[in-house]
Length: 354
Image (tube, rainbow, N blue to C red):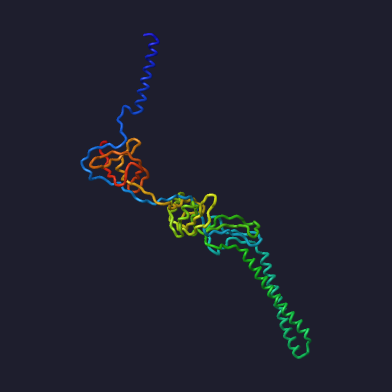
């Protein structure tokens, strides 16, 4: 055999081998399941199960954040230097508990000065009252001129006003002295502290932040179509992925103004007290989004043939094999049928050989 003949034979052999390989990969040498309905005779349909259709509420998961309804920023009301800070982040505090002590030496000195001024004015007022009484007696007897009586009366009234001013000044400085002790306005937990002993603070500068763990709620921006169907006191399911918890929250506030950018409304729902929840945690609120119709069948009536789902349907005493498309799984070993079956179809058990 000459060389050209050998080359031709090798080329033909390679082409045939390639064609056989392609045919094998296409499944030409294996049994095929023909799509459609294949009737198979049966003996008894007593074990048939009916395809049922149910109405099931649909929920849309909406991202949300846990927030504290009762939260406060603690700040100073006077200009002073911090002497002591009695709490740190994470500490639990009671209403009225002393949190921070400010330097109060100057205020105490002003209190002493105010008290001394009150004592001085009180002594002068006592003397002026006696002088006014004497002047009034002498004036009645015609011994003292009317001008001297008026002068004694004016001196008495001036000292009364001075005493009232001194007492008001004492109350003011005592109030400022009370401000030197910063106390908690609520029962709660310290989130963070922003100043340390030795810092000089000004009025309005934040020193601590506190929240009440019993006032936690979940806040979600719900798209307008769903938000407008919600009502106050309605209960929503809330999932907290970080703690693997599912809670029920009651809507307590529907903000009556939407966000024009996202076309959503802020919905605030009260959470029951639960250990492990903290402000700022991520949550998902299950918001009702309507009703959907589902066709459900037992999962054990569905056979897998490769990537296909197959069932056997009872039709006038004949078993028909049908290909279906399935969806979500549900409790009770039920599975959704997306297509291939209708409500009322009778399903047979999977045959031993098919």
